[in-house]
Each structure stands twice: as structure tokens, then as C-alpha cells.
Image 1 (cartoon, rainbow over the protein chains, first blue to last red):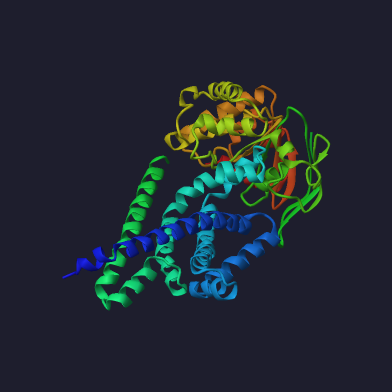
Image 2 (cartoon, rainbow over the protein chains, first blue to last red):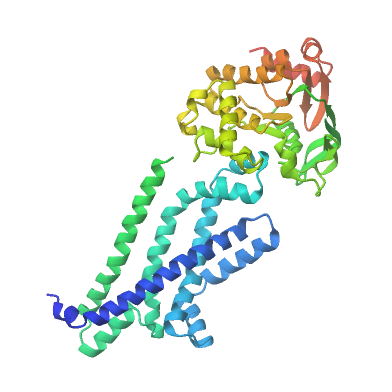
Length: 212
Length: 242
């Protein structure tokens, strides 16, 4: 049976960790989305050097472990654990988001761009007014997956003393010499974040499908 | 108005357009026919630079289309285009589809753009569908919206790239009727099509293409009665006798 006194007696630590995990995830989510959109557009724009730069970014970042990116900011640039972890999380996730968005844009029929351009719209206008609104629908499910991964990956902060949920779980465990129960409660806190995220994405997906 | 002068076009090693010379005058309706793969659509798409030419010169009202300095967006305002697969914007209503370019490119006010959009929707006979989404319309209705969308920019030239090829046979007539009306109003039109009845009735000139070359240019009466080229004769016998 689970020992709930572990939870109640260490609640302030759990909540502090929970708060930092939310903070770090939220910042990384917004920042990686913006960065991901920019990189996706770089990869698609009809300007060759931008394509190369975008491709290099994606291939480099997504093919090295998140832990190493985190160490780079923590040990290399000597940032605090929370900053280093959040920054690493942002950059790492942005490469996956860029790929999801690029795939979404490419799945819009080519004729949509041609129809928009032949009516006199500029490339930017056509992208913004015609292509991206259609791509959003296609991109929502894979983007949801990335956001859920992001929340879970934020546990990387524990490795660099990032004061997150996992870090506080480690702390409670080493103090109380309890392992199993401590981490079950940690998992429960992660679920409080990820389950609503899953449901929210599912809802959005359904609503957007209807408007088609 | 539209002048092709020795135009060549390659897709990689494939020579799609070979030494095209063609002049299309204001108010003229030119129908381009020929077997598939003969370069008809490419010819059409060069006019508004959806395809760039590889050699020769192409000008519209004296403006060099291929020149990097030519403001292509400005040029395209003046050229409406209708595609085989309509390409209406699925996330916008019929009205929004038509109003988008006039609002964003010409800077029309909402009210003005709406008035013009409704006028052209009436003209193509589906004023009652203004607030529908494209997916709620039949193919013929969608194509008529696409025509209205092109017309709303007030272009001097309309390009049609096999506008009826993706339609159910029953719906071809309603689209051709709109195009005929347009032709009688004096619109300059370049039409790639397999609709021989339309070509015969409406075209001022027929251009027959094969393997990237213009083999024959003639009035419909001349062309259908007595095609000069053997290849054209063969083509006609194949599509007319069944």
C-alpha cells in the first residue's frame, strides 16, 4: 500500500518542484514553438542558404542527446540548472517541432500556393493567409506529442540541480530512504500536467476537423 | 498583348517548349489543344510566371515577364487564373475566397470587396452560395467560384488550365457557359482544354501543340474543316470520332 504520509509530510517540496517543472515546461513550450516555426520556414523558404542553415540546425540538434545539450549550457556556459535545462529543452524540442511544422506545410497541396500567388499575393502573404492556416490542422497532433514529450523531458533538470519535480523527488528519496512511493507521487504530478495536455490536444484536433 | 518570341523551356533535360512564337491580342480568345504532355499547360503557366522560361522572350503589354526587375505580383494582378482542380481555399467561405486578393493586394475595403465579390458570384450564377465552404459545393459550382475569384481582381487576361477536366460530365456545361459569356464580353482568354465544342464555338484562334511545338495556328473553321498538319488530323480523328 502507498504511504501517503510521504506525500503530506513533503508536500511543500513536491509543490516547489511541481511549480518549477510547470515554469520550465511553459517557457520551453512557447519558446520552442516560436523557434520551431522560424526554423521550419527557413527550411521551406525559396532561399537556398536559409534552407541549408535550417537543415543543419535540425539535423545537428535532434541527433544529439538532450543530456549533452543540457551539459553544454550547464558546464560549458556555467548557467544555473534551471536556466541551462530550460534552454536545452527549448532548443532540443524546437528541432522536432520544426520538422512537424515543415511536414504540415508540405502536405498542403502545391496548387494552393500557386492559386494564391497567381492572384497577386506575395510569398509571405500566401504563406500566412493561405498555407499556414491549413497546415495548423495537420500539425496539431504531432505538435501535441512534442509538448507531452517536452513536459516529461523536463526531468532532465534533475541532473543539473534544476530544482524541478524530479530533482525534489530525488531529494525526498535520499532524505527518507524511501524510493518506490516517492517516485510514484512524482509520476502522479507529471500525469497532472500531461493528461490534460493530451485531452486538450484531442479536443483541438476534433474542433479543427469539424471546421473543414 | 501577350507575345512569345522564340520561347524555350526545359525541365531538367526535358525540352518542354520548343521555339514558341505566339502573339495573343487584346480581346482575343485563344484555345490551346493537343495531346497530353505536349506542353499546353506549361505554355499557359509561363504567362504568369508559375513557370520560368529557359530562353527566348515573353512579354505582356510590353513588360518582360522573365526579367527579375519586373514586379511579378503587380503583373499577376492583371492575370486571372483558373486551375483544373479549382484550388479554392478550403478554410475560407466562398465570399472570403473571392475577397482575399482584392483586400490584400488591391487594398479594397471590406464593404467594397464584398460588393464586388457578390456581383461576380451573381454573374457566375451562385449568389446564394456566398457563405458556404468550398467542400459544400459541387465541382461545377467550385469551378465557377474559382472563375469569380479570378474576375474579382478586374484582370485584363484570364488563363484557363483544363477548367472542365476534373468535372462530372453533367457539370461541364455550366462552367463552359460562364466562359462563353466572358468571351462575348471581350475578355482576353487563353484556354487549354479538350472541349472541342467550346473551341469551335468560342475561339478566335486554335493553337495546336505537339511535343513542345506549335504545329498549327488557325481559326476554328479552318482548323476543324481542314487541318494542315497530319498530326493535327490524327488528333482530331481520335477525339471527334467516338
